[in-house]
Image 1 (tube, rainbow, N blue to C red):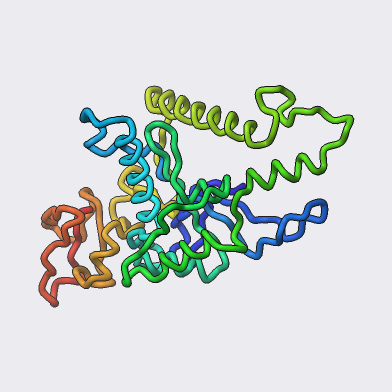
Image 2 (cartoon, helix red, strand yellow):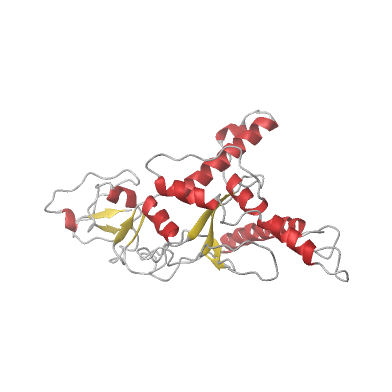
Length: 299
């Protein structure tokens, strides 16, 4: 298992499109599991999704449930229709479609994981874990062909699905008479499915507790490597090389900025006069051609 792996997209080495990933074993000689040809399975998490505003009303439980499912679907589709990104070290800027295409062409699978406030998960991840069919397949705009391709790959054979059901079936088949009748060594976890549900609940609870503790104690620190996607040079005393990331990559690709524009934080400037701050994500008015290459924008 890899946590937030880098170098998934060669032109953007610091980009981390997966929150965690694993490389499937190509040949399992002890089981009848089908061979998975994908080079890597990556999960992109939208954790603890905020409830839609209508949740706060007096809607019935059934209506609230329907709204939660709709919200989860929107988040999953949004992960596949991601925004663009850039890397200041390679001076590369890619659209969201280009990023998804890189992942797709390298034989990888991107599976979104959206989590609702009450702990429910989105349909795509339910298909991956439990093989639960989707009632309404996703559709994508014509401008998002790569998102549609990745969705089709993730939801089709031979990409893995129902891995918990497969693990349960293989465990029951290979269980010895002398072994424990319960997978989790307790009647509360008789099969891998119950064991997984208990473990994932414990892990999420521990993660939330650690985040709360670290924020309260001030243990959340900024990345120190310039190659890290979240590196902030102004925090580490570097106020002149703030080209580490193009936050407004989509604006660049749409022509609002030139490819050679230097993006700088509020403490950085290549001119004696401080730059005029420009709200993001609203693209600023392009500078005249003779000054564009020396213009510094705040982000």
